[in-house]
Image (cartoon, rainbow, N blue to C red):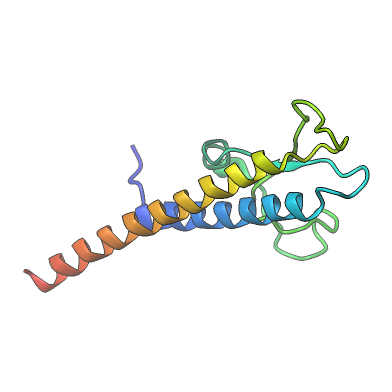
Length: 126
């Protein structure tokens, strides 16, 4: 069994949360754009489980001209139902996602801070 590097995992989750927040913000910004379809990022668990087999570009011309999403896939969302305006973006859903992201950021930061304090206490011998 491989050791889990908590700080690497927390850093990966922070990158994923940043990409997801950007994606949600783009959905909100384009809510009234004709023909715009809501998108989301693959679940964090799926992103972490696929990390070992992910290819990485070592040069900007490799794999075509792809947007750097930190190795995470952005998924098209199938609308559960069109809103009354005929758009595929539900502001309520996007705001709920935004709240979930904020909560996850806060939890990530709290966990990293707690482990950092424990490491410092161990190093000081207190």
